[in-house]
Image 1 (cartoon, protein in one colour):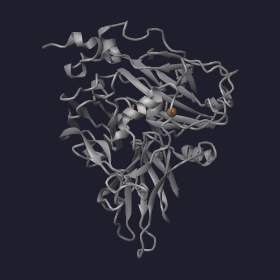
Image 2 (cartoon, helix red, strand yellow):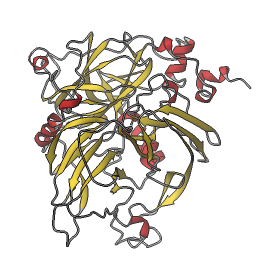
Image 3 (cartoon, rainbow, N blue to C red):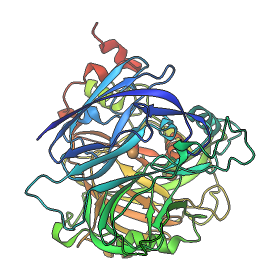
Image 4 (cartoon, rainbow, N blue to C red):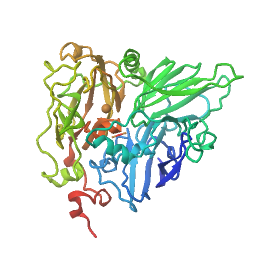
Amino acid sequence: ARVHNYTWDITYQYKSQDCYKKLAITINGMTPGPVISATEGDTIIVNVINKLFMENVAIHWHSIRQIGTPWMDGADGVSQCATIPGDTFTYQFVVDKAGTYMYHSHYGVQKKSGPYGLIKVTVPTGKSEPFKYDDDDHSIVLTDWYHSSSYEEATKLTSLPFVWIGEPQSLLINGRGKYDCSNLNTNVCDSTNPECVPYSLTVVPGKTYRLRIASLTSLSALSFQIEGHNLTVVEADGQYVEPFVTKNLYIYSGETYSVLVTANQDSSRNYWMSTNVVGPAWNDKESRINQSLAIKAHRGFIQSPPSTSDKVILLLNTQNTIQGRTRWSLNNVSHTLPDTPYLIALKKNWTDVFDQTPPPGSYDFQNYDIYNVPGNTNSTSSTSIYRLEFNSTVDVILQNANTMNVNNSETHPWHLHGHDFWVLGYGDGKFNMSSDVRKYNLVDPIMKSTVPLHPYGWTALRFRADNPGIWLFHCHIEAHFLMGMLVLFESGSEMVGEPPQQNMGCGRTKSLIKP
Ligand code: C2O
Ligand code: CU
């Protein structure tokens, strides 16, 4: 196995990603940042140098499980104190499974400003993948782009009255999009700027290509398609999929897919590769649920889930308020991160750092009306955590509901750090503890680390709490995360080693810093 060493300068730069010039946060001057390319079993070392003048940074390696390296997860407030300007954090971890992954900032809503990219892990020689393609593979990073800054967004979302950030100004494919500059001065928006020339892929007729696609959107649920071509889905979140063909791939923030495309159309012309926002959320729900259900483990690579679980956690997703401010809650608890990272607090037994009473494991689902605006929108905030027995099997049932607006329910892409989970099922309406459990797919469920919770629907997952530490499970929509749509799962944290100095510096950890 090899060691790959990277040094990344995180800096502000003016970028014209969609022809409109705005301040972006870049990695070595780029957004998306460089593709990390390695082979299964390799070690990745990234020296992240914070050269931003006025804000912290933390980089998360999304879908890399960090088995035995929980200090490297890059989650501000959970595994580390964010890195202050002028400091360097050295991330070191092993990429233990071939597949397509991503990295991104995990500090506030900083991701939307640009520090993100793709991680590609190839199979070692001697191992083969259950599909073939010609040529090399190609990375496709999908993002949504806002002309306002992360600061403005965070302020709007937490102010009274609440100001919604709205739809993005552009969608970007590999950092390129097109904003309508027609009414703007060319100093601000110039449609002839070479920085916003669309990404293009030159293909040879008859050849089959592998596209590694990652969605790093801040908000948007996307559909991706190539005019006139079929996409064969073969990989999802680093697991092989029983291949299926589709015209358009639905992809939610935090998900990755590999698709195969054959250049079998008219070679005298060009074809558009495009992405668009799906929605309004509920009107095209059926085709989206159908595609979610079509994603199953490849028959040669099935990892069977345990047939039963030791614990079931039901999480009702609701939008509500705390002292008039809009929040998102799970079982009527809206979560906030403590000033001292959880993992350090657990290790040091600082019981006053976070709320010690566990959050509720379910809600009154007999009586809760998921189709209407909540009667009482008052929620509470907490820093509490779910403690899971090490190595136990846990089911999580995500239940969606109506928001505070009439006839509205949103899509939430839920992401688990430190583990892959089996996707046991998706359904419409209220989850039924007897009949829906009997319909669980225990035969060939896909393992993933991000799944959508569809509007007014439910999603059921199962995972083994086999990675010592404390791990975030959260909605990957940055705004929802900021507004409390997260929980924490702790298990075996007593087995974790001592916190490295570089993870400290904030909250109570200041007392631990040695000169
Ligand atoms: Cu990609 Cu906690 O996130
Ligand atoms: Cu959400």
